[in-house]
Image (tube, rainbow, N blue to C red; front, side):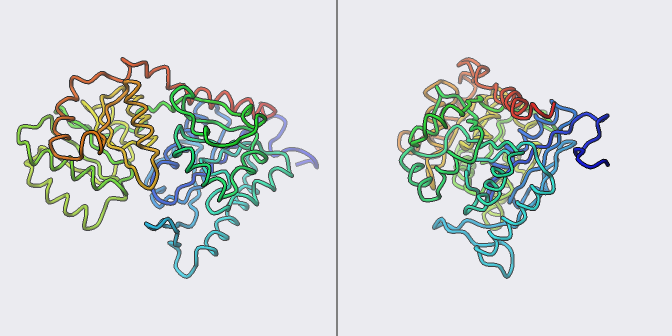
Length: 401
């Protein structure tokens, strides 16, 4: 190749490369969001490719579309007190963070992305992204985007967290744009942050990220409700309550299809399986299905927790839903569910208002058929997120067209 030529020849169409940093230490939310975004960007552009950097321990269990791949970073586990320990034998958390930071830097140097999209954490896990972000800023060849879900936490709690992690200088100085994957008139996740006008001028509200059935799955022929706690790591209480509802009321219908999620396992799952077995087929259970979109599409209704991706699926497939939000370690799910209920999009089962009892769950399931669908409250107008992301990505990489 002649000296000074680019990484493609003059006769080839330009290649656009997108790197995602998916802040997953435990759970699926960040990885699933990054996967949806990567799929949309590559499907809309035959000359685009994407790599997702993720610490999710179950990344390898997902299928990725053509021209989308992932790099698994060494894993960490979050303890109940909020601290982290390494999943890598022989390394403490500082050594693991250093290893992850080096792998991130090397991957970006080798891949040379035109666009880096960072999910949720402006500085990455324990600041591991800062060296790379500062290097990219000096180099000036890669556009950077901070992507935020519609709700992060209570404003005061988030402000304190960002102060502790040094997120504000990073958000102000190291990103070309900030994308919020929601609607400002639904909720503003940055309301408690003292962002400058200059930074707020670089914010774009994309709308929610529409989901489609990408991989076919065998859905039951008989009517069913889908019960999903998302990744499942904090979903045991909700799953137990649904089982208790079916145990308490032998006439409760329709049947339920329960997806545990990959993180609900061990003795807890064994105990749930024993309870399911006694229900005579009225509830069936699966451990984990990466093609959950197809099960959403076929369901009569949904009982779920209030994570971002699950909420997008409820809206996208226009399903009547009862959301049972978690309230610890952060109020994100409760804020999202309560605001969605105010807008008439879903119903929420609130511990204080409704009580977490078999009777309240029975009543919620029985009300599902008469509930309004999200589309009745204008949900379709909330789901333009992928289109806006594609438009903004093209604008940022316009010199590559």
